Image (tube, rainbow, N blue to C red; front, side, top):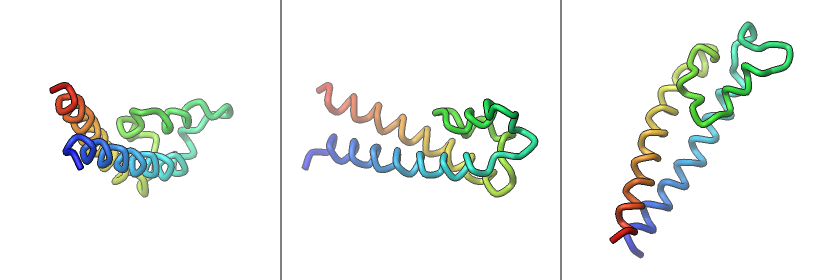
Length: 87
């Protein structure tokens, strides 16, 4: 198995973990941050959800830290995959 395939597989697996943590955080939005239409809550489902840490209650505060770390690692893995396949 090539290294680039392994890098891509790890990046995709981490994407599923990132999405799972995003869903966890989505269900822990502070009640005072929700408006009647749910618009503020939709920020919890964007790619940048960990950077809206003020939306979440205390149980999801740690998840935002993991989300920030995972987003950086996933982006780095995709860049590494692009470099490995460009040769």
